[in-house]
Structures are given as structure tokens and as C-alpha cells.
Length: 293
Image (cartoon, rainbow, N blue to C red; front, top):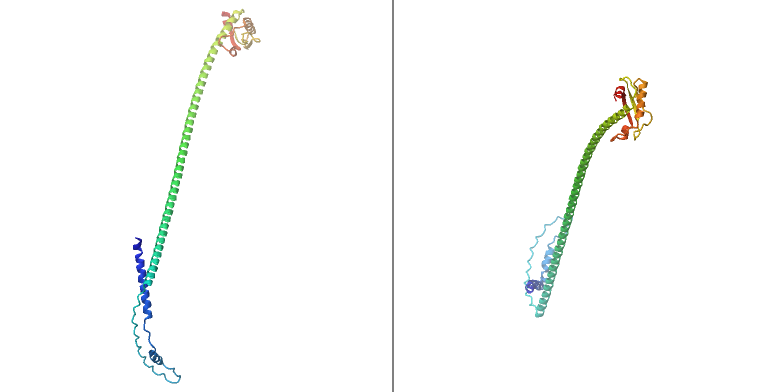
């Protein structure tokens, strides 16, 4: 393949050298006009118009003779080159062809290297762009994932807060209901206890009245009655003197009632009734009830 490629430059160089040699040979063997042609040059120069005098009229110009054609030189055949010249020429052409082939090979190698460098640069650029795109996509995906996680976390927090609010509201409703129930229960218990205390107080008042009847002796008009306040100790003993809070209008009757109370004391404390309920007892005594005892 290398010998076939170097044939054409060698043939071209041989053709160019042959043309140059033929031109040199032709230039050295051309016929040059001889000195006999000088009369024609003189005749040509004498055909020029003479200087014109100022006062004299200008003569008519003489006719210009036609130029004589110069015969063309006949080409002479150059002598054939010698064997040494042919060998030198072939060697020079071969060296020139080899140099040209080397230059072409170097240029091809340079172009190929440039193509490889360009391809490598394009590949590196494509790889860099791909890496940048992948990095950007990864960052975008990570940002989207973080946003989704944050949204999910916020949703969980909101759900937790809503659940806590519902639980708190339920707890408050339950506590309010329990409080209302407790207050109702307490009110019912207090009412029941108050009714029970009232019942026991009435029983205790009746027992005091019965004990006072046992010590009642005077006889008075049956329509007399008075209200007495009695202060008792936890053991049922009198604390201070009984006091008339509402008089009958008859001082003797009032005094007789107080004397009977003092004689009937102490009074047994009532069972099931707190001391605060029988610490002070207000009893109405009537002459009729005391006399019937």
C-alpha cells in the first residue's frame, strides 16, 4: 500500500522536471535578430515628424511603414539527460515523495490526534454535563424528599395536636360531668343529711321535751307557751342557763319551764347526729303538752 501511494507524487515530480528542462532548452536555442535589421530601426526612427517651427505651417505626417514580422525561432530538442542525472533526479524525486508522504502521514496523525482530543473533550464535556444533571436531579429529589418528610412530620404533629385537643376536650367534658355529678351527689347527700339531721333533731327535741315533762309540776292555763334556747356540751350537759327567746307573757310559766329544763339535764347525746347539730337546741314548750305528760 505504501509503494502504491508514493508512485503518483514521483510521476508528478518527473513530469514537472521534464517540462522545466524543455523550457530551458527552448530558451537557449531561440534565434535572435541580427544587426542587419538596424536600417529598419533607422527607417522607423526617421519616420518620426521633425520639430515644427512656429511661423511655418505644419506639414502632413508621412505614412508609417508596416512592421516586418520577425520569424519565430524553431524549437530545438534538448539533449537527453545522462544516467547520473537520471539517477540523481530519481533519487531527488523519491526523497521529495517520501518527504511529502511523511508530511501527509504527520498531518494525518495530527488530524487524528486532534480528532481524538476533540472526541475526548466532547466525551468529558458530556460526562460533566451528565454528572451535573444527575447531581441536580439528586439534589432536586433530595429536596422533594425532605419537603415530603417535613410535610408528613407537620401532618403528624397537627394530627397529634388535634388528638391531644380532642382528648383534652373529652377530659374536660368528663371532668365537668364528673364535677356536676359530684356536686349533684353532694347536694343530694347534703339534702339527705339535712333531712336526716332534721329528723334526728326533731327526735332529740322530743326526747328533751319528754324528760322536761317528767319534772313538770305547776298547773297553768293550757294556752301558755314559750320558746327556750338550750346550749349543750358534747356530753349533753347544760352550758349556761337556758334562755327564753319567746316569752309566754307569764313570767311564772317561763320560770317554771326553765326550772324543769335544769332539773331534767343532762340530756343523752343523740346517736347519728353531729355535735354541731345539737349544740344549740330551740324548743317550744306549751302548758297543755307539759300537763299531759
